[in-house]
Image (tube, rainbow, N blue to C red):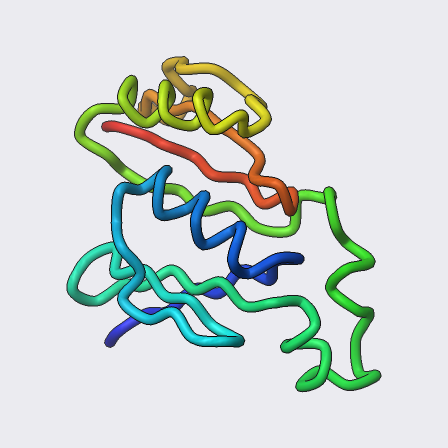
Length: 125
């Protein structure tokens, strides 16, 4: 099974640049309407403009823009050097939600919010 997680974003290009700098991964795909980053050989992170998905969703759900700034998704990434990602997220001026701490479930993790309100977590076991 291959997995593609898609985050709806207000501005595809600025979000793509931010994630490229944050993850230090070039997009696998970057076309109008979709950007994809290969996180590993079976997992991709996609960025789709809110306006694009709104056309697909039609009037069946609320418009994704209605949820801007509200944490609607969390991307939890296990990384080798959590401090490196923490510093990079700070340099990119992402909103720090919770610093690097040992969590009750055993992981060491830090939490940030991206410009659309999605929570990005960097963790190590």
